[in-house]
Amino acid sequence: MDPHVYNTLILSDLHLGAETSHAREATRVLKENRFQRLILLGDIFADLNFARLTKEHWKFLGYIRKLSNPKRNVEVVWVEGNHDHGLTNIMSHLVGVRVYQQYAWDYDGRRHLAIHGHQFDGFQVNRVRLSRWGTSLYLQLQKLDFRRKPLTRLIDRLNTRWLRMSPKVAAGALAHARQHDAERIFCGHTHEALHTEQDGIDYYNAGGWVDSRLTYLTIDEEGVRIHEYDERADHRDSGEGRGEADPAFADFADEAGLLEDAEYESVGR
Ligand SMILES: [Mn+2]
Image (tube, rainbow, N blue to C red):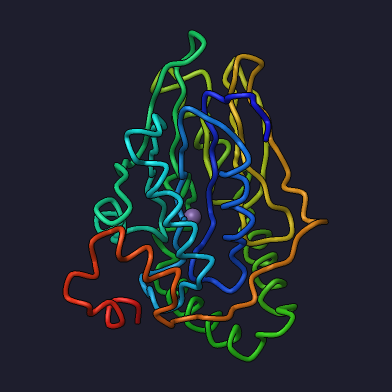
């Protein structure tokens, strides 16, 4: 294990509940690094349907709950994304972390600001209808396409490119940082890791955990770094145990105090 302790580690767009979510790899990143603060920068969940969470997805949540134990001395911050919306109240109780719309902190003499980024995506408001329809189509396709997922992967990629969100979110975020006197601003949402600088303000995008490139950010005295998760020694989620009240969920639910009435199956589905 790397003994180096980062000031902050930032991870976004894990989309738990989606077939393409790399929860196992994300959990590994959290276990293999040391940090004083963890920022879950939105869209940690894909939607409100807990039945789609796999064993690996529950393990990730269980590990977040462990990290948020005061004895660990790690500050865990959840910044709400557009997919997380409406779920974060429940999760702040279940996982034990505070939820913010945006989160600001000072480090190394600079103001830092973390916000998911959908606020700067001009399409968002007009896209609600299409996006709901799109989500249901996408989930149908996942069912047909469960083996190697080429189709859903392609859609993930098209979705991001097609909307051309990256420059729009970067521009909006830089303006937002300027308004709030922040020198560094961090977003997710676009699924495209990125660093750009303008007039002394640095913008970083944490990327995501659903496409082929799995990325996260770290901050320490040497600055901000974009890391790419090395997939070579790894395998993706099998999808087994989806929707079942499996042992991993039972452990998690037990720890979270959900098992008092021994009715966790109804919660799991
Ligand atoms: Mn988003």
